[in-house]
Length: 331
Image (cartoon, rainbow, N blue to C red; front, side, top):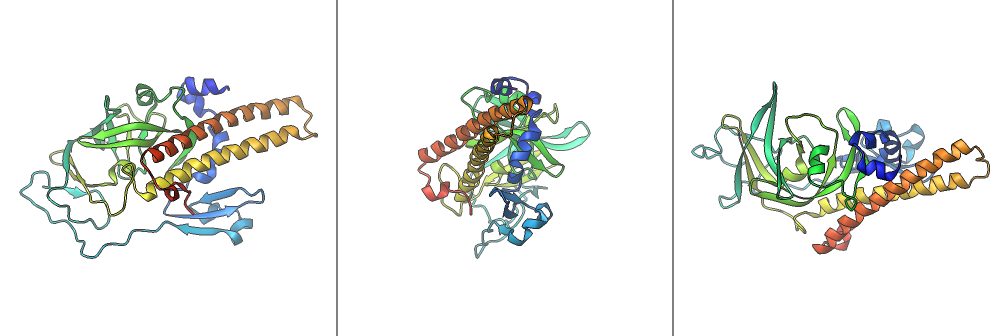
């Protein structure tokens, strides 16, 4: 399969080579976990996993367990008081977990109506606008780490254009890994709240009732409540406790520089490995050479896409004067 067929063909054709990609990128599945394990194999390849059982026995004596630091609760914080005279607060259930500061009255708020059913399945489906021109229904899911969209919406947004990075990566969940495409959208908006430069993944369609899933990458900056009787979701801005550039804190920038940098490094290493195999004198079978040459062509394509993805992130960081040390991978 040629790189042009991968970009221009149906998404299921791109997904057909997912096993190859999964083998190369398996070690990135737990980069966003709160605790993870790191080890290096005999070839010098660094691996990550969120489960010690995934670490081969022969490497467990050198495994490193890492944990992302949690923010300390500031003194004087408390649960927000309820104003039952406010219709937007009646019968609401908090969606955000943990202790939440009392939001000042002047803080920006927006009520978003939602549809609560997909057939017999209960959902919270809200309208989301992409690129200021395409408005579609999306499932509101506090259990999703990031925003996922379906191929038809991606096509509407012009994400399959030649200049847009389109890198196939595994997308992990409770049920295991599935193929997805990592790319970036210019903007997304819910009510009056907008986010620019949003890394998302394109996955195969899950339902005809919505066009994707809006996850924590968008909603984590808001105090959120849901009113099931009135079918309303309240979005309310939360005061930022950390310095931000381009609307994002240091952890956001480091997360994506870590992920995108890993893709670039992994595909470069894969190319070096395949080129070394082609140079081996003992490889004389033409069929074997042909197979490796085909895999090398794909690896070079995905390496180009990974560079394109990383460079776009770096340009965005430069445009917003993001500190250089924020652009380094997490230790």
